[in-house]
Length: 338
Image (cartoon, rainbow, N blue to C red; front, side):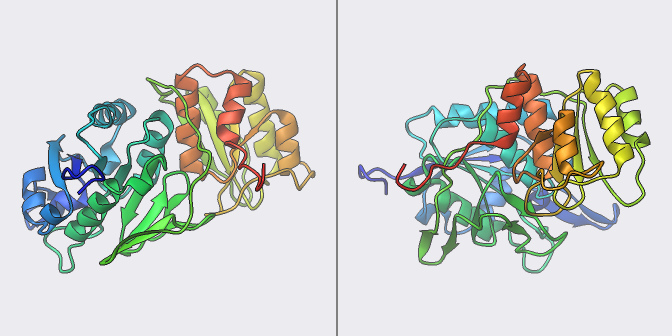
């Protein structure tokens, strides 16, 4: 029940993913099979949590998502958030790119109504199918008023994780999703939701389109600038470079990026490490300080895929260099007592 005595109500938007899949012996693997209604039928106990209002948007593997498709889902979320009868929204999708899609919606949505993204690591044909438990946990979180204003969160395996930090850390493990910088926001267990921390200030961009050709390049040993130059030659709108360590690359890669920036192509520097941030601690040629002096923008603790999402949306919104830099860097956390 909600605080005013009415039954809590959650919109559940089904888009596909492993949670909707079954093994097909002819295809030789898992394929999209279950509708939203069929997933709900396999999820007992939801009626004890909230009234579910389903919206079935198809059965798209997460690896097939496009920016226009993500904006369409954002519009569905926004419409649900505008309905005073809806206490929270759940998006059910494939887990492959949840860390990107959840962050995409976190950036473009600004209503305080909770949005929870969930899915499954095992198909409906496998022992230990985790979809029903994840869906129950997601609905529980979506109608919990303590998650109002916390932005988009990801809920799988009982963990509640902020969209800007959550990372898929293992290809198949049930507890793959972790917040490697700040830790989870909380947990869901049989006793309900427990909140361990608040997110604080969040990024936001009023975008209705995204730059399609933002390229992500990972630095490695003995790397020259040819891959980055090829991306520029193919018409890149922007570049995100995942540097080694705290923001370091070969000098050749920096030189290629400097030429791209001289052509007006924005370049973002992050780290290929799963946690932490690129910075200006090293000043040798190719060190993070030399990247920033050449004009590269830092992305705080955003991973490369998340930085790509932010840059694509920022360019789609028409942001200039100063505002793009602020979006990538993120808000400065409020100081205690400030």
